[in-house]
Length: 379
Image (cartoon, rainbow, N blue to C red; front, side, top):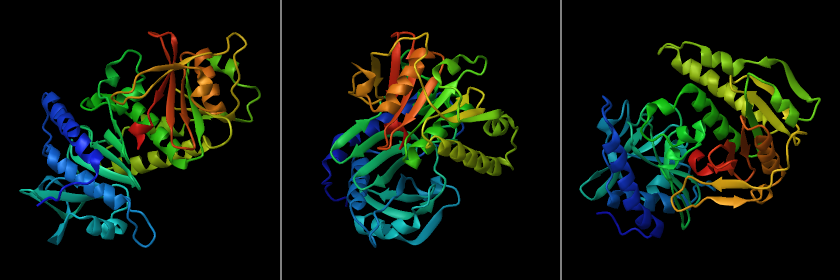
């Protein structure tokens, strides 16, 4: 029998998460895909509870980083199945953690009646499979695989200690929502996850991962007005533009070559994201051609000093705030907001050293620079 959970946040959020999965499955019009089963609230609560307490434990001085998938082995592909079922307990998860820390490996958990058990591991999970990922001690992310099966999983909720953030899936319905944010929130629209948006999201994840902070400016390819907001000369300007990402994205890739292509793409993304760690801004145009890095942002001679921005986070219960851009962060955030204020057809992606991630874009509807806080979508 499942023991009584003691992590209070698990009980608070379980019903909401169950309702999210039920709503998303009902919203699917037609597809040939075989989905994972809908997790019931009491099972969600039990999985989160065990995962949370496991996250606070250490094995040989290391905290576990694991991904728990709720599905039967029959719903997986080429699963690694243990000869004997293991109890789903904190002790066993901590012992298994070193073997399943590699990205892409999930610990398979299923149930018989009210009893949860571990059956093995898998690299494949079907669409909308409930995933509970332990990121660090006390930090859990509830997510699922998107319909297309390609790209970053969709985050549903983030739990950090007693703090609960449930992603507002309706945020992408708001006017002026940038395509990248829409893609991150694309719960049941495979078309929202195209190659272009996948690159932007992968760049955001990689920028956040290197932990040094950085700015990536995405500017139009059909004009050079952005130069008015960059101090000249640019120390690390590329001549000609580097087209590595652009060339990869333009390739027609067969299913046989997809894995090799994806690996090369990942390396290119990580290399570009690494440039954002250099002091200054990295510049890329909307054709994914790298223009420069280490560039210094300045106020356009034709523009005014930015005095206010609107800050939102796609989390239920978080209301928009109008603040001075200096209140949103340090010099990095202020300069990015000023750039978008002057260059309204550009987008600025800003990673902070503390893990925060903000997308600055001009809102035509609100006539203001809109700062989208999306770190809860990138974990």
